[in-house]
Amino acid sequence: MIYRKNLYSWEQVLRVIVGLAAAAGGIWMWPGSVVGYAVAACGVMFAVTGIFGFCPACAMIGRRPVEQASRD
Image 1 (cartoon, rainbow, N blue to C red):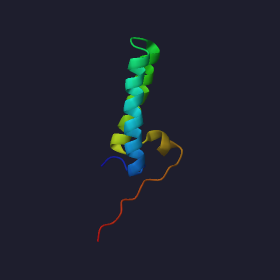
Image 2: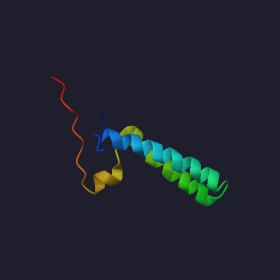
Image 3: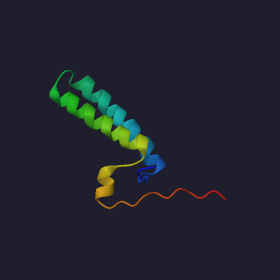
């Protein structure tokens, strides 16, 4: 794997839900405008960070990777 997860599981789920809601809201609230597309793009990127479990902005400010629970 090229990256190490720095988001917890609950945060990943929350980011996907909020990101998809923002993407849909941007297209629905401002259809065909630059603002709508910008909000939708931010929502999609937020959802993508949730899907992969890695946030570059969090990594830049020094957030440590999430360690996986060891299974014995």
